[in-house]
Image 1: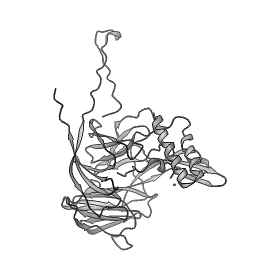
Image 2: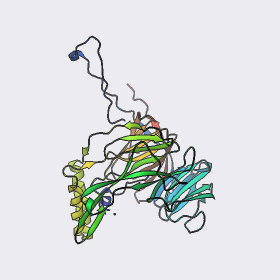
Image 3: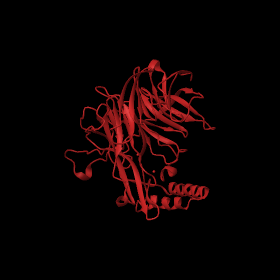
Image 4: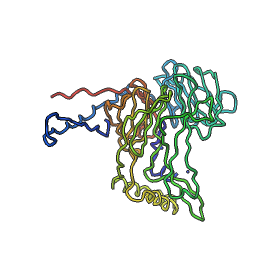
Length: 393
């Protein structure tokens, strides 16, 4: 899962409980239609709690992008700046490192993602997928023929690992002042030129193309843009359309997709959200003395042709058995609601996550994430999902 919790109004201008209640058709034999009893209201979802198992502090944490369990139950941590992969124990001590930046065998240039399976570790570079047994390099697959920039990587239960890339309409003059949407495609690492056939399309992020005679083409994002929201697991894919609220899953065997949540009518951004959007745009334009910034901000709103729809989701994290869905929050300092779904889409419960925390991986109800303190210093979080006890009568 990739985090998109950066300030969304900045992203908007830069080059992706079962909410819908199933209707119960009640048939009353021998009764007239007017005599039918109304369907009972659906029970609210259970309340879940995230227990804090451990908070891991280390001076080695810098812009953490991925955290997963790895060999000897240590944490495999991917820093972005600088790019490095660390093995930390629960005390925060450095146990070892995996690979390093460089041009040689088993080395990477720019990390994108990682996955783990037992003692094996996959690293996704912009040009290759690297396989390690613990800290020893055992294999490399080139991605030089992959049609697009790789996004995520995952082990599969049978066969070679899978990577994803995005494809979409060209950002040319003919598409100016339109919201464009890329599509996520899936590739085996041993055949990076041929996309895997999937039963449904997985949508990626939205782009806004603008054009004028003096500046030419400019690619940004519409206001309240939807991002790619999906996660790869050992057994398959769990994905959401952040724009219409659908959540679906399918396995690597190519079986038909399951709809975990149906599409819902669009929800417009509230007046308060729009006010905050314009306040931040105005502050940015004043600070940077950029007159074009305000122009493009207006375009990012006007492209919707009326009320601005807000996305439904911002994140999906799955272990293949259960899935966490992060509901959309427009600002990084907002509280985020999360729903836990079972394999068939039943809502097992919900919880709220406070500001300054990102959830990155899920395994058997253990959640790994990253938090920031008041000094903006990162720490790792080991959390466990627990159902709250029923309140006393």
